[in-house]
Length: 80
Image (cartoon, rainbow, N blue to C red; front, top):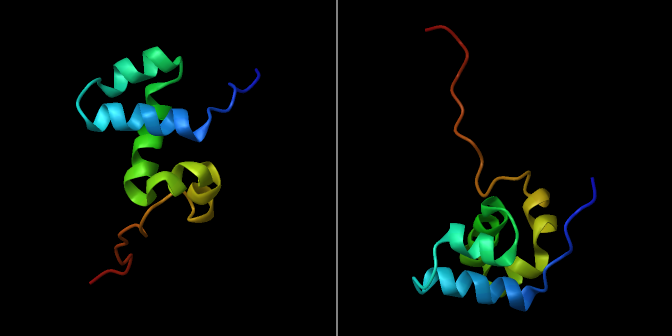
């Protein structure tokens, strides 16, 4: 299966700003842009974390941090 075309950064910014302004929901923005809600949610998260630069970096920045914005909480496996 082929990948969907790459969206221009300015289009992603426009979509995210319309969501943040309350003009459309994530679901509606995804339908209008013909992408998944997950993609639009990722765009929104990237924008909120790093502004326009987060959308430029896109998945490359997300992968470089292991897919997490902060390290996971861990519990000790030792018995007490």
